Length: 96
Length: 428
Image (cartoon, rainbow over all chains, first blue to last red; front, side, top):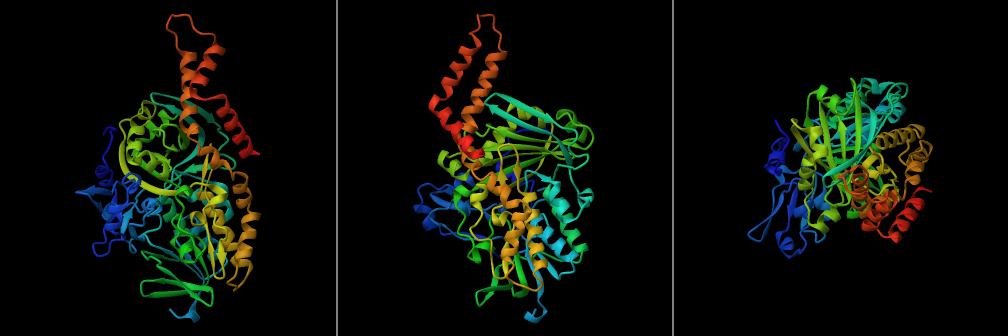
């Protein structure tokens, strides 16, 4: 293989995830996010999981690397719940 | 479980701090449970990274020799980058890793799994796949933890749950993490054949290199790193989330651009990225340590206690985590059956030189959090190099005048004095 720029999707495709289909570990109040001017989560998330579609904030918890950067940067508290996934769920690094 | 059959200690998180604490306690015959939310220890953890072996020696002399280390670091490198050039300082010391091994490149998934297994072998109970959701408190004292419907009790609970430490927060020892207190790291593991890594980094056998990258972050506060593993390279950036947000730049893009920098690309070309990881890093050293690291029935260790530091040339975290885990274990051992071991723990952190060392580097983060350090000075140094090594047949400028011209282009006299003074103040 050769070294090239990889998209977030390509990078996350390399990682192992066990997705908890029943319980998202991060929840947003999109009405708060809609009022947030800066939306810093769009750039700080290393997995680029926060996106705005049709003016609405979207977050895909399935590819979360569980770093906590969004929680720390979220000023308006649109992230109403931030916990770790339930035991055994979430990302599983093979190298780390 | 009932309160009567309580443990001597519950340790939340089977990272290096938790495993070190569990190992020392179990070896002393204590009844210990080490609870990990990952399906195996280490699968939630990310490092740059490297481990200084002195810390492992505190746990058990010689134990590190059995550990799944990657390479022993004999080359310490600092790379100052500008857009299309780089200056690399390469210090090789081949005594490193002989008598007293200094440090090894590590990958956390294999290392942490091994370390937790060592604690288990000493008699600790390792419970993986369990997320501790809350603490159990009675009469102002922490007496156990709650995980789902289970309640587990102990004399002392040790919060080794990492940088986000939700447990320390629930215990009221920490506020929400302030954004300026952390940096976000992102890294790729790039596989390459062993011999290719050795050739590119001038290494023989199991020797390894550690490289700090200054600049190369598109002007965002922070830096980069490269560590050689046995058959892969860890390449990453650690950046200020606040500055990323301010400049509207994505950490993902900065890492992708860094890979394509000619001075980096030549080291990783033909490699295969096999993993992408990210993690928060406590970034402000001593001032990031919560005012109080304990209360009756609870102590906080490792990243959860903000124990991480950047000296400008090296990054330390795993060793500090291990030392703090040992400190907590010793405090518990010295206070048989007691729940209030905080004062003894703090004393151990002093005795083991952890807090004195962090105090010594206490102001370094202010120095390193200056935009000039990560872009102006690296650019200026690269331009001076260019001037000194360029020959185009025209009459060169006198070197002193040329040098002064470049310096003036990048900084004012006042800025140099101010930065020099800050550097002086931070290091004295």
